[in-house]
Image 1 (cartoon, rainbow, N blue to C red):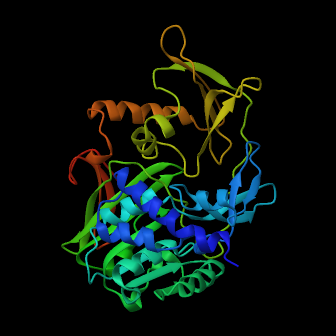
Image 2: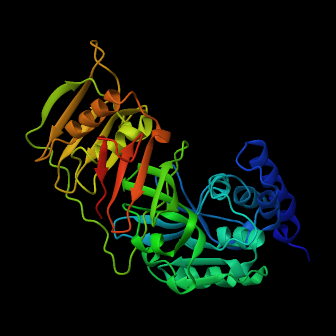
Length: 387
């Protein structure tokens, strides 16, 4: 008896390829053919989604609705971790539109050897294998519980790229050099191993994030034994790279005592409304490990304030609605003034003519020094990157 999956995935895969083409996410015929040929459902046998209450629910991928979900331009969470008080998504199959934009940005050609950082479900490795041949595709992930199922899924549809269980920051030195490196996890600095394993003239596409949502994809070229390049115009985000035995970052409960309220001319919610400012704020005083969120009206469920919390218990919230003077009310508590860092970043952004992502770049030297800059690598508006 023919199952829904057996008979239903191919037209859906062709639809997805056509949809990504129509939306302008992909134009290379080789990548379009890969999307239409690779059965994404094989790589996502388990899918989880959060309902309106925040609880994770299992999606039935064997149903027509489930297949529609799988062959649509959405991120699919495929693994959860029990954090004691809640579950957290730790692995996903990235949105196909983002994945294809990244693959096109890499400017992959026949004969190239590609290293993927973050095997995940194996779907992206399958696209690469279809495009280049699996003997030219290498992928690494820290979690054997992800790598081994990905290996089995890939083999079940005829792909056998080289998969290695290892900390992704180490790359795969024994098979270097690579013409292209693509990272499907975010990092606070560019690992030096990626530089040493990239061939001269090669490209690396890296999601550089200094904090949650604070950064973007940067396309780096290896020249003169270093890396240099600019951030992509369209913003994207991946989950942070995980390392062996790495504990979840602790964060104290917000200190809501001794609150002080004032007004600010810096708009709220930079993490969604002005991500360049949010990125720059991580160079102007925000502590490592800050988290942002929203406050909602209990009756209307509409957002009323943006919030920032730091590991030391510092807290800030900024009202969404401006005052009659066109400013915003901000309330802070704890040892660190979090909103002052955002204000300094906003001032910096204004002083430099409201730069967008395309004006920001990254340089990585062979000696390990690396920095972010506005406009040129030697601009006075530059900040060193430290792990």
